[in-house]
Amino acid sequence: MPISRLYDTPATAESAATALTTAGFRVEIVHVVAAPVTAAAIVEYGIAPAPAAHYAARIAAGAGLLVVDAPMYTGATATAIMEQAHPVEPGLSDITYHPLPRNRAAPLSSALNLPVLSANPTPLSSYFKWTILSADQKPKAKLAKKIAPLSSLIKMPTLSGNPAPLSSWLKWKLFWGGPTPLSTKIGMTVLLDDAAPLSKRAGMGVLKSNPAPLSSMLGLPVLIKHR
Image 1 (cartoon, rainbow, N blue to C red):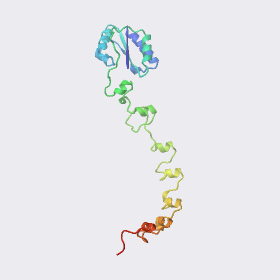
Image 2 (image 1 turned 135 degrees about the horizontal axis):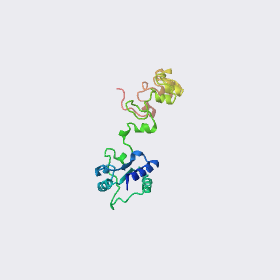
Image 3 (image 1 turned 30 degrees about the vertical axis):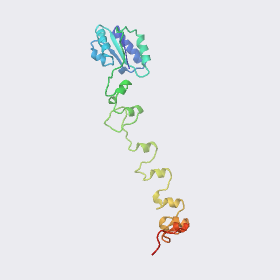
Image 4 (image 1 turned 120 degrees about the horizontal axis):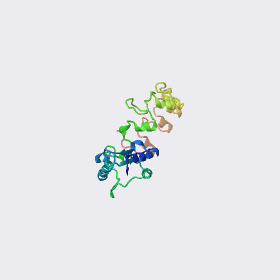
């Protein structure tokens, strides 16, 4: 959230701003406001309208304003650094420092003080230093030149060089090594060699020899008889 302090001169505000950036706060989130400036411009830094109007009058009289968009969990550190520069009393007993919605298109990024996506077309890729898919973008990452990056990463030949790379990698036999690889593997004869292999293995007659094999096995009469 934005934290503001008023100083007697812009030079003192600049000194406090330097202390913030030296402590690790990014330059783009530290703002020194000096004359000439309007209340509306100060509101853009996240200051409420009433304090902004008061600040504008004080700045016109020679004061300097420092505003920092302190990221989450850094507010106490920023406040301590700003207080070391001896700010002056703002002159408003009811002054508040609640942030205003400064970026309605990206409220979460604004609340967390994160740069919006438009500042970097590929923020995730840039963060992880990944190459991007489109050469039209111009972040720090560069377009991959390898046509098969995954295969190169795991040191596998590309698909065009081997029609069955997975089988070759796992040392499996190809399916076209035989018309019935599964039956061959478990020692079963193929269906075309025997018209009823399951019935034969179970010791049951095939259906064409007995139209009601289950009824015959259980000794039950069939529903119809030959006329």
